[in-house]
Image (cartoon, rainbow, N blue to C red):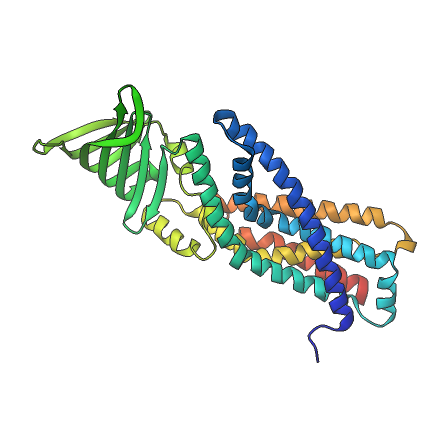
Length: 373
């Protein structure tokens, strides 16, 4: 016995064709807007050609697909069942004895499959390209003087300005990034060709400090040893190093959750916690990705349920509007819940899974009430 009947395969094809159409239109429109945005933002500071702007936007394309896929699935579900309704095929399917549970199965299978594909395959690919996009954008704008990264050996921070660069390594972080422990700092000075600055830097000094505390405008190093070229090491009790970051923006320089793929997130979360940093954003991101299939099924059911009413009975426009409002409400509820989980105000598993599960169970209850009595 086949998993899907011929009628269910037909409905699945209708949903797939609607998804391809809707996703193509959405991505084309978003891509055009994003190219203009790159020309306006990046092109406003440096000379940026149209080809470079398109290349930057294409790097964001997988991320755009990941973000628009649930809404494309919603619209595709509405489109597919609206077409079935207009051609009276939905009435014939009902008259043949096929229950709503069975003719809604194809769209649920499609949504669950797309959710798994988005989390397990699309997300890691989008994360790599998003990281490449941010690096390329920073390179074009000649920024990135303040970057923070976590590795197995601790954290690495790079800061500086047009004349000097500081590379800072710390074994551990305390006080939400304001205090670095077991610090090693290397200062480099930009080299000049006459009066023209070059992209080369020369070593100035190395500093090994027991602790570095971030204050407004400077790092306060304590119990340190300063090493200068051709000079013996010099021990100091304290030393101030200028910085243009503060406690608020320091963690904003940390890796964006969008640049870390699904498979890399658990290890990255462990490294972040071991470094003494708050990993709530990344934990929330991981649980959100695990809940993606449930979210997609909920979105697809919302779109389908809004179009199941026979057109001759009227009220189709009101149901469509209700479906759209429900989907938008689910999106904002999910984002609000995610913000609570990212800040630690709510447990990340509950914050990630509650909204899609609530809407999914509500949709299933509505089907049971309308179809089974």
